[in-house]
Length: 151
Image (cartoon, rainbow, N blue to C red):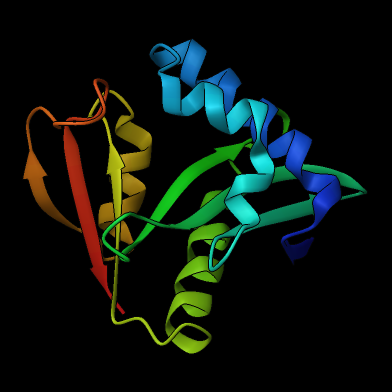
C-alpha cells in the first residue's frame, strides 16, 4: 500500500470514484459535477488530494480542501468497492489529519456528510470526530450532518 499526495495520475480516479458513490447513494449536485469536470481544483493552493495505491491501482482517495472562510474540510473520500473492507478509509483519514496538523499547522478540520452514509459516520465517530450540527445544510442539498475533529 502506497499513499500519495497530489499525484496527477490519481485525479481521474478521484473524480470517478466520487461520482460513482454519489450517484449510488444520492444525486450529483453542481459542486460534484465541477469536481468531476475539474479535479485539478482539488490540488490548487493549499488543497490536497490523497490517494492510496495497491498493486498500481488507485484503491481510495480523499481531499483536504480550503473553504471560502479559510477553514479546511476533509471531503470527497471514496474507496473503490474492490478494495473496501481493508481499512483504507481509516488510513486516508489518518493521513489527512496528520498532514493538516503537521504540515499546515491546523488545530481543527471538519467534514460534511449525510446520515444515509451510516458506515462512514460510524468510522468518523470511531476515529474521534464529533457532531457539529445535524439537519439541512444551507449550501448542499444532500448534507444533513457536519462533524469536526480537533487535531
